[in-house]
Image 1 (tube, rainbow, N blue to C red):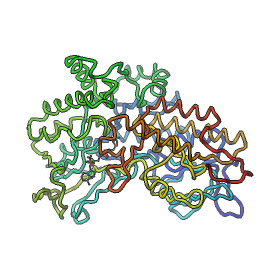
Image 2 (image 1 turned 120 degrees about the horizontal axis):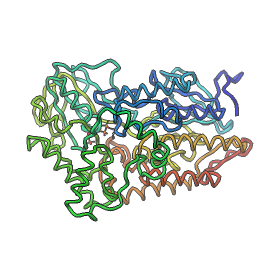
Image 3 (image 1 turned 180 degrees about the horizontal axis):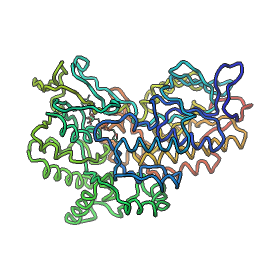
Image 4 (image 1 turned 90 degrees about the vertical axis):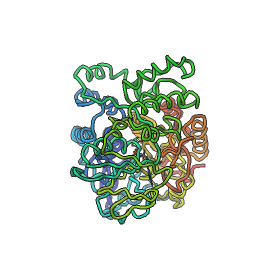
Length: 551
Ligand code: NA7
């Protein structure tokens, strides 16, 4: 395989690998590829690194996984030296960390910013991809790695009259880089997922009035965020080998926490309440790890959901608002549970209103108001916290053509099909990091990103050692994997929620459960076994072999 070069005669740059996206996945992919001596070029549509942390600059934006765990593990020096200031670092600090990593590992010289990838077309004769950028350049690459992120395609809702609104309209997933000042303004916030729940308390403090338009009440637990002491950082640092091993191999979701040894119904009511109360006091996503069957058994799940509903009733003074804020339409945890700071208490403020848009959907947005059930809620600015076309949205925006000119969008019209979430049959040498069919968004993303990057890097190294030119998912292996992903999901409560895991937030998107729910440890073992068996389920070919499609 070549070092990076410009091919004479073709007039196009040529690389071993083109990586799309310079978020945490793309940056680490570049680092690994360099280490292996591959030539690589990363294309990033933003003007800087950081991916989701580059775009999601809304007030209150933080990760919902603790920073000591939501951070790279590949470099011990990095994890020993970087000082996280808080338990859950704010967006600006995570972005600083991403920039620090880019500088520390000298990544920028191989990243082209402000450049979208428009298309990637596989040439069955040469076995290479032609990748076209928004600047009109076409570059050649043997491999393409999509590090496009799972939550990076902000979705504007299709609400009548939205374009007629005279004030500013912001989307949490595409927030301006300059500070937005809501002082003295009446703000309307649409959406009560993680972004809405994180931003509402901060906006309420600044704005003269905040109206929250809620379609689905959401479960949220307190973050209990705070400054990290040297002792707390030290406790992680001294135990990182074990903490990281546990997150990779044992924890289902890639987060180090005590694992429950029993189901919720194995304890009596009093013990159960005490356990939920302890998890609630500690705060964070691991609330769902109080018991081992909360995602599986509806009766068990109800005990946790009832506990949280009870907490909402305790916090919110107005019983009518409290009732509206109590989620009843889905089992707890089947939509990603939110982690908040004073979300429910925000509704005790005199300047905060809650409007139910489930019973009466928004009729239309006028020049100055959001109209619901015939009432105009006057607002000066609108914040859309309406989420993303998750997991497949940013891949779908690229015109990807594999064997026979088939587009990935055509192939995925009925829902994404991959083998292990890593490759899709008919698209040789095209890898997806944390794609649908892998644990991905059900996990600590950095754990899953590092696993995929390492697996892909090992696969490319192995191809090179064996003098092989292409790698492609076998169709049978893919079918079986898709069936397995669905089977595992069907054994849980997750498909009961209209969540973005199911594609249910995007009208017309096929409803299938996209992430693999078997757990990151189980999944890692499957991927490692596949590799150990010579990449079982993948078709590997030499350059001079006839380029038959994988069966
Ligand atoms: P989410 O979790 O997808 O939340 C989007 C919210 O916006 C949710 O409450 C939606 O209600 C609501 N929504 C979406 N479209 C509309 C329309 N058309 N009208 C009214 N309300 C709407 O996105 P987030 O950005 O909050 O969080 C995404 C992930 O980022 C999160 O899970 C963490 O992993 C980090 P719905 O529930 O669909 O009824």
